[in-house]
Image (cartoon, rainbow, N blue to C red):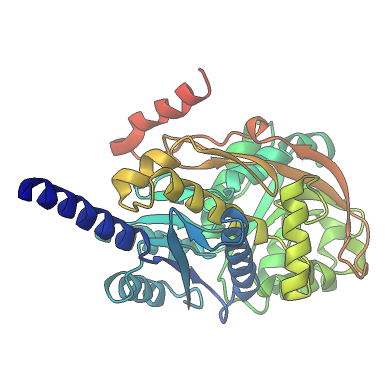
Length: 410
């Protein structure tokens, strides 16, 4: 009888401990930029991620019985600041998953921190292919696109409409260098030549004149601009002042609404690729995002809001699948090959390099003054499986690329 009572008591105690553990908060560290050169994107990431957690948890803000707490840190796109914040979040605040950020260089730094502390990093909008390529580690995942998606989406239009000799202007840091390399790799395969090396300018450039004059002197068929952040406005103002487009047509991704609104009216009618615009997707999840973003922020979702939202969906789905566990050995199997519906449609995380396949858009700039930021005519939605970036893992992980082929049935 005493033995039976002891067994029952032990079972009750174990159940009680399990219930207590299940109620421990799940702390997620969101590293972003809300005061530096990429502030506009950092705010979009934060807004999207917080709404994504709400959507994915059906408003309960709980996953696998654990209340979700998002601890936000502003790194102003400084790698050392971000690294210090990430360490503090893990060591002192009990953060179990890292998310971010908007700068490619900073994200590469966070990858090292995630590996050192053996936590999962869900990379943000930072577009360098190296994050899921040459800098890959098994703890890093990315639901957002990388620069290869941009140029794969745009290659056929460029080839048919813009000529065959291109030049590039790019920011001289991780994002710009990686984007320029991706553009040359993809577009060279489409028959486009690059007769001179990419023109790189420092990220903090305020006078672009010497760099723009180099573009004019090339007499190329088009110039591809790989630039990001608030200084994009200055760059495009100076492009207009020097009448660069009259000599060399300018090709650049359509950007956040405020940046586009500051462009010169001469850009109306241009065609380019776009990552996301709130008016493009036609599905219930995007409708929810738009409606709730308006209610909470009195504004529409912007360029990288979708990226933050979908990242939150993936995190919640993985933690649900692991029944609340957040060790890499539990989350990695849940994330590898994860397929889900998000604001842009279907997202698929490749198991080999942890890069998501995502839809993209081709659009035409129709105006710059619509009060609801309806600036575009949508020309084409390109499905995720039609834009498959190359697997560029380093030699030590190269065999993992075969996992992607297996997923695709190749």
